[in-house]
Image (cartoon, rainbow, N blue to C red):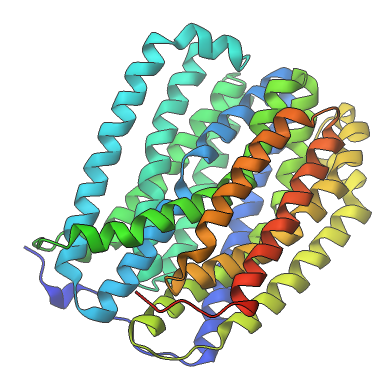
Length: 421
């Protein structure tokens, strides 16, 4: 049986450690992101319709609340380490592990009964891709759980390597199955699931010092008072980040959704640059808040995020047509190049809002959560009404991201902070 001596502790670190950790994660995100992005080179070897199907499968996986799950476990782990409640955390981890397995099994049963309807609605080429996606969804639940624990432990070294190895596994398998076996979209999705398997295995191994502890009971009401707002807040943020692809697939042709997926892949690459800053900031602020210590990281992270995101958007605006032609088929260039600048600039306020949301929720300041939920619901309704063109979809995304940033800014600077729970 593991003992508490095996559990990593989080000693206080100077700001130099912040730059080291965020710099390493940035390198890992760029390296891993480049490997993951390279999978889309295979779009030249399959039809636009197949690539669109691959895009919607990725969108289904992205709709799993992986961001909320990761941030819940990051917050709970950082707080448990700060307050010496590791054995209670062990029980939470094991309970969530089994609970998500049961949830996906129920989803698999539903998929079995409504398989024909799902294939028709999403225009998927065959059932094999659908069932591989079910396995991907399971890993999409498990990976953020263990990543969150690693983030709460501030185990950023292995978080970086997990990202790189995950992406390398995805790319290598997809290349073999698409180019040598000729599996098309099925081969690309198989690469996704095996990449996830590698990443989940690393996460389980790296966090064994916590989840293998003898579990102790924990206060359910106090736990839910923290977990529910975190799930809702980060869930709304994730919805604003991912929902557009699902709506585009529903309202536009297969070719148009393929072009949109290509532009979205490049635009979301901006977040590879900036998310590590908030990733490193979050557990440090949780730790400081739990110990009633002051932290001045927010201004530094927000400035760095703004500069990097703006520079990335400028680069994609100027070089977008060349990049698209280099990665995708010539048929993608006309539409995707027109869409890309709108997509890139819509990501900038979302990246900034992400920093503010991380800061507020790390301090258990949950007043912003109802606003985030309302914005997400309003965004979903707006997409059902305003989808005359791909540009209209992105203009809607940009407007709601600006509203999100404004709301988070209000709760950060213009209102009295809520007491830390």
